[in-house]
Length: 160
Image 1 (cartoon, rainbow, N blue to C red):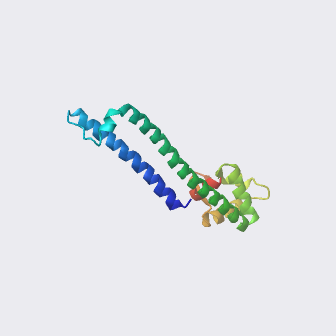
Image 2 (tube, rainbow, N blue to C red):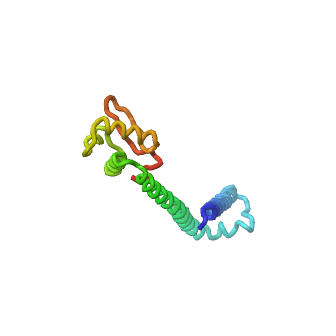
Image 3 (cartoon, rainbow, N blue to C red):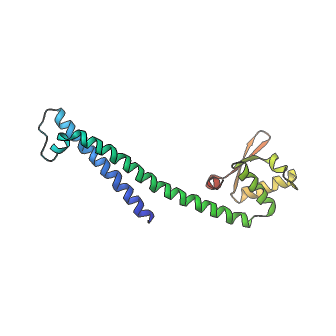
């Protein structure tokens, strides 16, 4: 289904739910003041227990519909991020790919000293690789005293 149709469907479901709750509250407010409930709202008062059960079920149903719509959108975005990460990996040099693989193994975060411990990697090569990846917007460096924490940028965290 088209994304705009999903959004419209979700808004309609939520709007109907809010409207029905408003009608129920309005009918109870009128009856609580001792006023005569209009004929249109009388079924809400006569069968209020049934109506409340139906509203509860409708609330659960609308929540499930909105959740499924949002979940489908999130899954599409995660798939796109994974695809983009695969494309990014193809364009990286071997040293840079090793750094990104280490980050993927470490759930998106590691220290620069761990990167320097990779086979064939020195402290200088690790520094240069991290700077290159930071310049390309793939990682972010956070300094904690003498320790550099390397993190995958937020946009790529879903791929991790």
